[in-house]
Length: 355
Ligand SMILES: NC(=O)c1ccc[n+]([C@@H]2O[C@H](COP(=O)([O-])OP(=O)(O)OC[C@H]3O[C@@H](n4cnc5c(N)ncnc54)[C@H](O)[C@@H]3O)[C@@H](O)[C@H]2O)c1
Image (cartoon, rainbow, N blue to C red; front, side, top):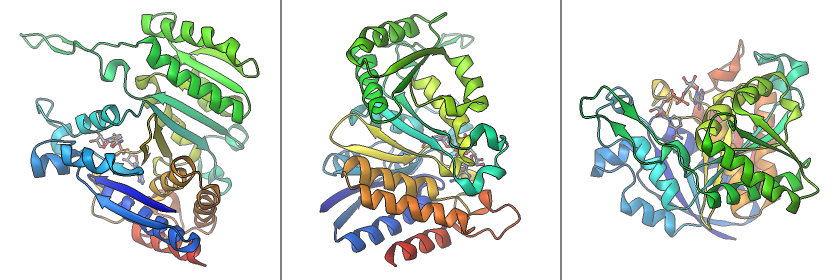
C-alpha cells in the first residue's frame, strides 16, 4: 500500500518521540512491503517562532494532502507562563482539530501485565482493565463564545455550548464502538447541574433504542472520576464532552502506568490524526529521556484506524509489550532497572520488527 503521512512533531519532546515512531513505521513498511512518504510540517510554539501562527496554512495543506497525520505534542513554558500572550501554541491544536473535522478522540486504556505491580493502584483493581474513552474534541467550553475578560480585568468567562448534531455524531460512534466490544456504553455528564449535559443525556437517550444490543449507563462525571480508579474494569466504552474527557483520560493514564504509554486517535473525517495523550513535557525536551511508547502505539492505531492494517498494528503492539517485559524502557518505567534513552528504545523496537 502507498501511504502519505503528515508528520507534525510540534514542541518539547514531540520531535524526539515522533522520530522513534517514524523508525517503527519504516520498519513495518519494509517488512510488509508498503511505501510510505512522510511530509513534515510545523505546529505549536515551533510554528509561532517560525511564522507567527501555531497552525499555519502551509501545515494545513500538508495535512489535507496526507492519508493520515502523526502528531507529537505542542506547548512551551514561555507561553504557559505568559497568560497575556495573544497567540498560543494550544490554539494551533484546537484549530487543527476543528479545520480537519476531528470531532472524536479515541483513547484506549489498558494495562501492561509487567507494569501492574508498579502502578500506585492495587493489582486486583486494575488487572484486566480494557476501556476506551471517546472524548468530544471540537465543541464545549474550549470553543464556546463569548469568552474573555471584563474591561477592568477582574472577571473572566468561558462559554460551554453543544449542538445536538455534535453530541449525536459522537454518541453514534460510541454505540458503534460498544457494539464491537462488550456492548456497554457509559454517558458521562453533569446533567444534575449543566444544561449542556442535559442535552447530552437527552440525545443519548433518544438514540439508545436504535442500538438495543448496547446497554447504556448514565453517570455523573464526579462519580466517574472516583469509579475509574476504584473499579476501572466495570467500564467498556465511555462517551463524554471535551473538558470532562480531557481530565478523565489523564486520570486513566495512571491505570496503564505512565503518561508516556497512552496513545490516541482523532477521528471524524477522511484524514485521521494519531497522537500520544501527553503534552510536550518541556522538562525532558532534548534530553533523550522521554518515553516514546505512546507515540509508537499511536502509530499502531494509525495502521488499524487509517489503513485497516490489523496485522501491522498488532505487530507494533506486540513489540511494545515485549520491550516493557524485557525492561527496554525509559526512566519513567525503569524503576531500579536500567533506563534506556528514547532513541535506544526506538532502535530496539525497529530491530525487533525487522526480525
Ligand atoms: N496534546 C498536546 O499537545 C498537549 C497535551 C497536554 C499538554 N500540552 C502542553 O504541554 C506542556 C506541558 O504540559 P504538562 O506538563 O501539563 O503535561 P505533559 O503531559 O507534558 O507532562 C506531564 C507529566 O507527565 C509525564 N510525561 C508526559 N509525557 C511523558 C513521556 N513521553 N515520557 C515520560 N513521562 C511523560 C511527566 O512526568 C510530565 O511531568 C504545556 O505547554 C501544555 O499546554 C500539550
